Each structure stands twice: as C-alpha cells, then as structure tokens.
Amino acid sequence: SHRGVSHRASSSSSFVASSAGASPGSKGVYDDPRTYELAFGFREFDKEAAFLASLSKRLGTGRDPASLLELGAGPAWHSTAVASLCPGAVAVAVDNSPAMLERARERVTECALNERVAVVDGDMTRLDAKKCVERAFEMAPRESKQAVARGFDVACVLLGTAAHLVHTEDAIACLRAIHDALAPGGVAVLELEHPYDLFEGQLMDAQGDAWDREDADRGVKVLVEWGREGDAFDVQTHVVERTVGFNVLDLATNRPAAGYEAVEQVVRCRVFTAPEVDALARLAGMRVCATFGDMDERVPLDSEEAHNMLVVLKKDQQ
Image 1 (tube, rainbow, N blue to C red):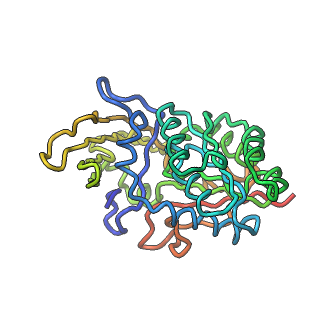
Image 2 (tube, helix red, strand yellow; image 1 turned 180 degrees about the vertical axis):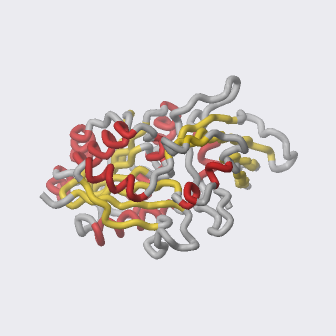
C-alpha cells in the first residue's frame, strides 16, 4: 500500500506539496520535475481525463469540457490529457513552482498543444479567475468561444494539492476563486487523502510508508518515502508534518544515479473530512454533488477499493 492502510487496496495516487522547506543540502519535492515524474507518473492520465470529461457530461454542464482549469498543475498532466481527449478543448494550468512551470511548458510543446493549453504562474489562494477565463477564451476555437466565455466547464485540484490549504481562509479563497472561474453548472473536482487515515488513527500513530518505481528507459529506480515514524500530527488542526523523500538509484548498480539529487522535505498537509469540504464549498457558493473513492465513478467513497477521497463540487446554474 502506498499509504499504509492495511484493509484497503494499494493507492493509485500519492500526494506532494511545495509549501514547506526542504532540508539543508537537499532539493524540495517540487524542485526537480524529473524525479517528481518518476515518483508519480505511474497514474493513468488518459483514464483520469475521461473521468473528468464524464463528470462534466453527467453532473456538470452536460457536455464534454470545452475548457479545463487545473490548479497546482505541476507538469500539467491533466491539462494535456483533457486537451488531447476532447477535440477543441482548451486548458489553463496554474502552478507557482518555477521548475514545474518550465516542465509543464515543455510537456505542452511535446504534446503539440501550445495553441490549446496555457501554463500560468499563479497561486491558487490568490487566483485571478477573470484572467484565467480570458486566457481560455483567447485560445478557444470559434465554435466554442461563447461557451468558454461563460467560464470553465471543469476545474480540478488533484494529486492532493488541496491538502496544502492548511489555513481555512486560504481554502475559502481558493474555492471562491474556483466558483468565480466556473461556468454556471460547472464542476470542481478535489482529490484528497481518504479520511480513513484520520479516523483509524494512522496519522496519530505517525506510521510512514514507502514504495519504489522503476523506469527501464532511463535505467533508474526511484525510492519514495511518504511519511516517517514520528512525524507530527496536530489533532486540533488536522495538519500533519509529513516527511517526504525521493532517492533515485541506477538499476544496474543500485547506487545513486548520476544527475539526480536526493530530495527530502517536510510537507504540511491538512486532512479534510467530507463534511468540512461541504461546509467550505457552501461558503464559496458551491455544493457537493458527488463523492468517489478514486478517479473512477465505479468506486464509491466507502468502498474497500477506495484509495483517496474525490469530492465533486457544483456551481449552480445562474
């Protein structure tokens, strides 16, 4: 299991942050996109794009997304996947890490999507929703400009990025900006840690987890440490000070791979419960319209197969 929850299946996603400081002499989690992609690139982003598109049709505006807003986008995996899946769709990928912004722009170019995916430097707690909509409108093809001008069909905060909203005022500011950026009837998708970890005492026990992933093409293997025994958890704020570490080894020698540096960072993450998200969404003018246990509509939140908590928020028709 990627998250040390014995009675549930191994997680298909793990979460990182850029908000906490790296240890002296080592890089932070977001400072080396190559290592980040090694650690978390196992996800099936084409299927996840189809999941987002399905939510838009079934729960949102009733159509495939004409536009997507991705906050905390990192390498822009979901922006490029949705733009590739949905003909004519445009996407705005927002991040505040210089290294990730550079990698996201490279990915957009590699996917030949420069005309349909914009990478924007921005903070999700101080987001200019109007400018994001305007950027999407600039890229939109003529036949969808009217729809895109009304706002985004889908906004997403995935890979646990919303867990970095450790202060309630920041969470409200982020969700209000999402509300303002969405089209009437649009949906926002948040991917968070499953609250089972909170209620079963996993966080109080500070049990770390670890896994590895090989990349035969590069000839390397990444070792991921996700939490460490003794990590602090604040029972009042539900914030865990989680130690995250990456080490990249050469597959042939099992020694540190040339060109990679070790990463270690203490990441502050807030563990949200579903009722908390519901209350925050209401304060931002949205409502919870669905929950899932993975980026798969067949997995309910209370399933034994649930890996994470997916919460779908809807902006009412206006």
